[in-house]
Length: 337
Image 1 (cartoon, helix red, strand yellow):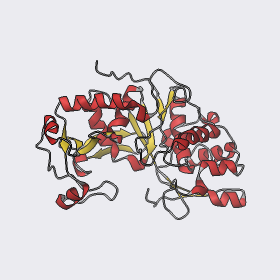
Image 2 (cartoon, rainbow, N blue to C red; image 1 turned 135 degrees about the vertical axis):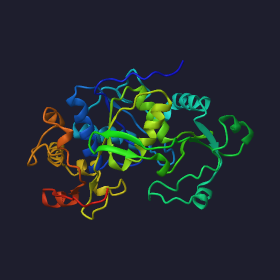
Image 3 (tube, rainbow, N blue to C red; image 1 turned 30 degrees about the vertical axis):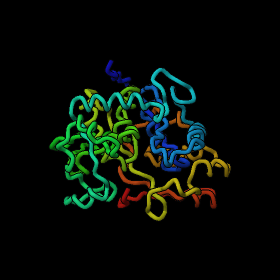
């Protein structure tokens, strides 16, 4: 039986990756996602996205749940509380992802690709964005899904056949968007033989089958959205509403990183920060108040409005707050996220 999508009105999700401690920027994005769902009285699912086996750490999974609960966020279903649409750990959903990939194979929407990254870089002629990699030149596009059997033990990946033309969506934060996946890397990976699904396929399958109605995430993931919309269409599902939040930048103008221990939630918690103070600061950064007011996330549900969210990155200095007792905060209209 084919998996069926059952969208739940207002349903959102919190989906941390256990590759390191959550930081100040994660807190802001997760707070916005939480408020967006609670404002519509929708359920929230907690899902651990641990497909990056080389970087995922079991202790980081537990830490993420602690960090977000300390911030004052809650969820209605997840790995710690259960629920009807589990498992809520992505690596445990392999059979579900494989079933979706099988549907794409049957429809000849994917093909086996044996090209290495070095080969693609040498063959690609089109320019590409720094983080997106080279545009795939279609070297293996002539293969059919059935040709995978003839490859034997040769390593290969499954690529999705990107149709011509841009993908358009109305972003809940950024407004109307139009991006052409063919110019963002072309045919993209949806899985590797014997190693499981890619992020692009897994996140689509999991959001669809968990009934997610709205996806709120950092705007560094904007290039993923047209690819995921194509996968929704290919699998016969309705895409959720997408909203991409400008990132939080450090005082040096660079995006915050998990490797910087000073801005991790665990560090702030261990140094005695009152989470209500942090929530108040984050609420101010979201345009919900003119000044920082010690508060809990639930205090901002009725006032929350995505339309009030600033469209530019937000610059914050957690280390200055720890030294001086207050954060140094400034808008950064010209920053790059």
